[in-house]
Image (cartoon, rainbow, N blue to C red; front, side, top):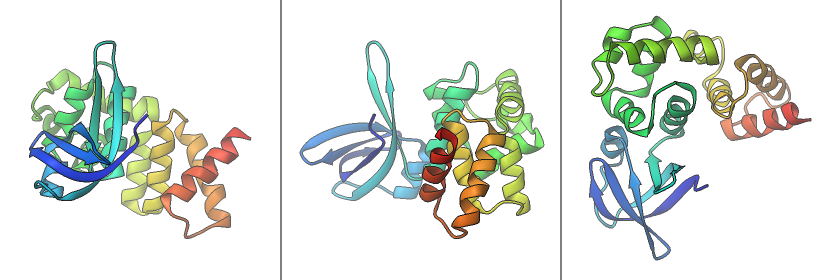
Length: 198
């Protein structure tokens, strides 16, 4: 699995980049949000969080400017029935991550349905499955209300994206925070994984 890609841009389009990493040119599909954030031009150095989608006839690499974008992408394709990479990229291109979270928490399917490629039924399925099956909306709501720190919320969401239940993820992250109150997201995730696997 290719999880991160660092190198210089050889070619740039709003939906994809070709990144030279030590002499190998990787074609990376990106959402418009990543393109806008990077303002990528030829020769520019980039550091992308990536997700490799392996299919029978293709290996497709998706790249994101932030872990938050990548986590949402993975969550959509792995946790919501009928959502593939194309629709997940449309979601990221169609609205900022924070706005998407707000729509899920509030059940605003009308705004979600305005994203290209998402109809009313798909928007309803996104809200239903992210709220009920995963518990993601609870984490987003708690983070917005200040009930959990941004680092704890991000760690919790990363663990949910890995397939852990929200309740178990929150419990493990809280235990790590007790011993390391100012820990970064990566430290919280690693510590929580150690606790849940022991």
